[in-house]
Length: 274
Image (cartoon, rainbow, N blue to C red):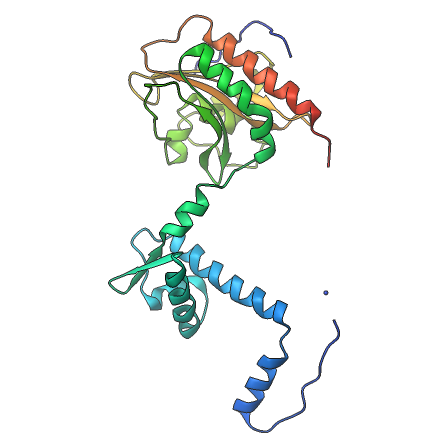
């Protein structure tokens, strides 16, 4: 694990009691009518998201029975909700199996992991891509996946998909920075590096000039250099990374990445504590 340092650079209103009735069916209907509209709406939303969440973990889709079991809802409720979601495009049904629908993809693409961080970092990441003539990004670790805050790819450069599992992520320079800067005990560190290596890396990243370099460790023919960006309270905000298609890093690139990380961190000093 190569962890060099670069030179320092500039920085709840009322309740309604139902009248007793003897007929069970009539009682049920009467109780339903007494439910506050807002509570009923929350129930429907909870059910719809339970269906969507279950489908989000089923690449091969789910039949009605399996979907009811996975969502924890009654089969009749699941069928009603799923069909409504199909009409909205949020779910699709193929050969009696339900899958996440295209509308969720369009909505999901607009999700920003941290809009505030993006606002303060986007210009610096763009400048880094321009000066390095390579792909530059700021990423975070969210639910054991690398997520982009912002990225810039120069014209003619190919986009490289991110690794999907923790072990592969931890072999990249970005992954090493993000795992090593997590508070101790918050995450399980991948075993591709020993406990001692993780400890040494964590200590080295306390140096504000530190960078982590990936000499084709994750992908052949690609080298990366990454540096942590810090919030004013000392927590890691993310990792700035430059990825180059080469057998080695251009001279001065670690310093440029370190400077960009410092520049974003300095901008974050403007964020007022909650």
